[in-house]
Amino acid sequence: MTKIIFLDFDGVLNSQLWYVKTKGSRGQDDLDVTSIDFLNKLVKRTDAKIVVSSTWRLTKTVEELQSILNRNGFDGEVIDKTVDMRRGEDSDCILRGNEILQWMKAHPEIIGCHYFDYKKYVIFDDDSDMLYWQRNNFIQVDAYVGLTPNNIFKAEKILNS
Image (cartoon, rainbow, N blue to C red; front, side, top):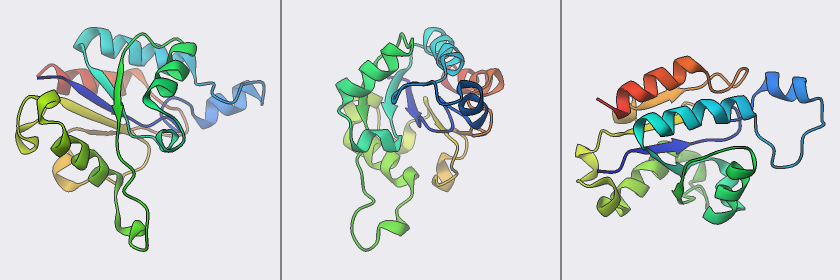
């Protein structure tokens, strides 16, 4: 069974405080190295893999997302990205949680079981558009500060339980 971190970027790997601190001196794909360090610790302690659920996935390949993370100091592995279900006239009704669910349903060989039995995942996001049954695996990150040691502590507890 593979442990998965469904990862948003904006508000999680960068934050309002980080934007103020960098004052525009950052590059286009720069992320907060402090948040990346926290993420590295989590990946090392849990052996989790990354599935990108961020809107960055819409314009980048998995390889490009891995490269962006690596340039910012990430040591882990991006194995995939969620599909974009927010197209068409009903796009306002699609929650990010549905996109994560769709990924789980499509990859039983990676998660090692049926999606409704899968518990070894966490979702890091600053938005709350997840499904009710994902609530025990969802960690809402404060977009003002980004990823924190407290978020990592909670995620490690979920992934290693």
